[in-house]
Structure formats: structure tokens, C-alpha cells
Amino acid sequence: MTGLRRALSGRQVGMIAIGGAIGTGLFLGSGLAISIAGPAVIIAYAVAAFAALALAYALAEMIVVHPEAGGFGAVIREYLGGLPGFISRWIYWAAQVVNIGSEVIAAGLYLQFWYPQLPLWVPVVGFSVVMLAINLAAVRFFGEFEYWFAMIKVVTIVVFVVLGVVYIVFGLPGHAPAGVGALTEHGGFLPNGLGAVWLALTVVTFSYLGTEAVSMTAAESRDPARDVPRAARSTVLRLALFYVMGMLVVVSILPWDQISSSEDVTQSPFVRLFSLVGIPAAAGIMNFVVLTAALSAMNTNLYLTARMTHSLALDGYAPRWFAGVSANGVPRRALVLSAAGLALAAALAVFTEESAFPLLIGLALFAALVVWLMIFASHLVFRRRRAAQGLDPSPVRLPGAPVTTVLAMLFVAAVLLTTPFTEQFNTAWKAGVPFLVVLCIAYYAINRRKAA
Image 1 (tube, one colour):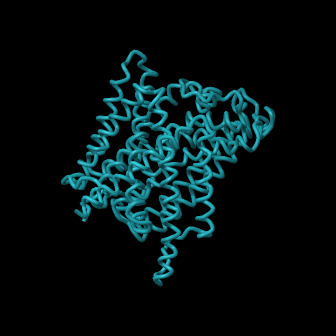
Image 2 (cartoon, helix red, strand yellow):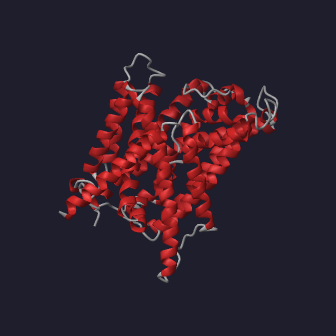
Image 3 (cartoon, helix red, strand yellow):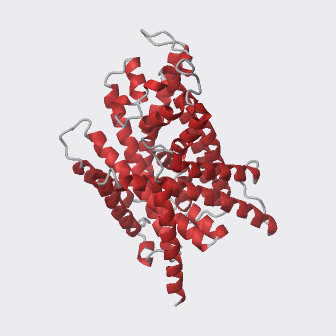
């Protein structure tokens, strides 16, 4: 018995997955990918979507059979062994803690858009307390809160895409149809060559990280056999539609070489289009959206890290104290550890922005890609073992597997090997490999103590 309660509805499970996968990257960070690849960034988003869709199906296929605490971490332990199961959960925990720290700092900066004199630590502490309080409440309350937080992001993206398509095809009041000339008029569709598209894939793949989050809801879903596969499929399809269509609208309307890769809300491609349409206070509205996006991602990631810690404690790879749950079924003690990680990551983001924090961001990408590789490897073993034991296939199946699984693994491995050549993520291996070594030593030390 895990003590967790099956209180999440199907719609909440779906939105939690969306909340974890869509942070502020689409609204602000998309400019970075465009600045690398130009209009051909559309190709990068489409290719990465196939890998994310393969991951979602592979995970759903396994989680339907194993709807237990720990999500993908428990599955990796089952099919790859204790060490991979230990590494996947702890390295993912570290990655999500870094993401939580960066999102709460971002949220504080967005609040300063309206209150520039406000010291950064005030909103950082305030938002941290609020998000922790939401996570300490019953999981049903957390799910409802995250549902509406994520809905704001979804509605904004849909409105953006619809307005953009109308502007491209029909025009807007005072503006003739934009057409798609911007796709080729500024140095062509591939202004920086195919190599630039591949480099952009590191940034683009980062946008899809979080797809695996849906597996963590299995132990608290009312009907995991129905809800998890449905949420996994719909999440990736929505992400692909949002990212590919969103980028198509952006690079069709705005010259790619004039799109800023800045984190400044007023430079966001979304703000540029909304201002063009004549929406009053477009920058203020978008600032509200990116603020809720940051808080939504932070909220979901706190949920993930608490469940990951709880899962590790159940397996004896974190102090048993963290396995405890409150009367309403929330792993509050595990949340305490995540809160400590949040405080550390936020402090490093503020005080070591130029030194330590880039290493942590690199670790986050490295960790997530390593976890994806382990999930795909688990899927290969899962298929082979069930066939060898004469068990029925899972009710959800990844089309084309095992070929699809292997191709997705090769893609993820290639992206991981490319990270040292990108300015944004060249710290991935510098931080990731040493951390892997530390985790291996910790695993064997814990096992030796258990055996003593």
C-alpha cells in the first residue's frame, strides 16, 4: 500500500500533463529556436513531436499494466533493474527541482513587469508558499487548480493560432492578408542550412520534456487504464499542434530575423501579433499568461518531485520517513524535500546566474534525455518479456514497435550527443556525467548498508 488516493479525474490527468510540458518556453523561448533555424524551425518541432509521441505511447503501454506509485521510475526498475530505477528517479528529481527553481524566479520577474520596485525575493517566497500550500492539499484540489491554470495556456495558444491563420488567409481590420511570404523572403526557408535545424532540435526537444509526467498520475488516477493512455496521446498531439501551428503562424507573419530570442515579455512573438491585431494592453495580457504558465509548470513539477521521492522511499532508496502520507493521502514529507530543493535552486538562480545556474539547466536537459532513453529501453524489454512469458499484449500499443522504439531512442541519443555543440546547453555533459557517477556510488553504498 502506497497511501496515495485515486482521486484524479480523466480531465485533470490530461491537464496535469499539459501543465508539466508547457512552461514559458512556447511564449518566450520559442524565439531562441527560431533565431537558430529560421522558418525551418517548423521541421524541428514536427520531428521532435514524433519522438515525444512515441514516448507517450510506449509509456502508456507499460503504465496500463503497471499503474503504480513511481510512474516511469517504477517501470524502469521492473524491467532494467535496481540501478537504472534508482538513477532515473533521482536524476529526474534533480532536473525537476532545477525547473521549479527557474520557474519561480521567472514568475517573480514577470510580477516585476507591473511592480518594478518590488524586491525579487518577495514574489519568489510568496509564490513558493502558495504553490506548496496547493500541493499540501488533497490531490483532488491540486488537480482542479492545475486544470484551470493549464486551461489559461491552452486557450491563449488556440486564440493565437486562430488569429494568426485569419490574418494570414483573410487579413484583419486595417491589415491586408499577410500570406506566407515571410517563410522564404528573408534568406529562404533554410537560411542557416540543415545543420542549424539539427542544432535547434536541442532547444525544441527541451520544449517537449514533461511528456513523461502523465505516468506519475497513474497511482492517483480514478481509472488509470483509461485515463493515462488517453492523456498521453492527447497531450502529445496537442503539444505538436500547438508548437507546430504556433511556429508556423509566427514565421509566416513575422520575419524570422526580427524575432527576438529575449526573455522580455514585450518582445514575445505572441505580444507582437496581439498588438498587431489591436488588442489593448497586449503586453500586460501576455505577461499574465506567462506568469500563470510559470506557476502552472512549477505546481506540476512540485507534484512530480514529491511523488518521485515518495516512490524512492517505498523502495528503500530514500529515507523511509519520506514514504509517509497525510490523512488526505498527500506525501507531505516528500514535499518537504522538494521544497528544500526549490529553495536551493531559487537561491542559485538569483546569486549564481552566471556560473552555477547554467550548469543546473544543463543537468535538467541531460537528466530528462537520459530518462527518455531509459523509458524506451524499458519498453523494448517489456515487449520481449511479455512475449517470452506468453502474456497478452497491453491494451495500448506503440504502433510500429520495436522499430519505432529503436528509432526514437536513436533520435534522443543523437540530440543528447549534440548538446555540447549548442551555446544554450553545452553544460549538459559537464553537469550530467559527474551527477551520474555520484548516483552510482550512492546506489552501491545504500545496497551495501542494506546487506550489512
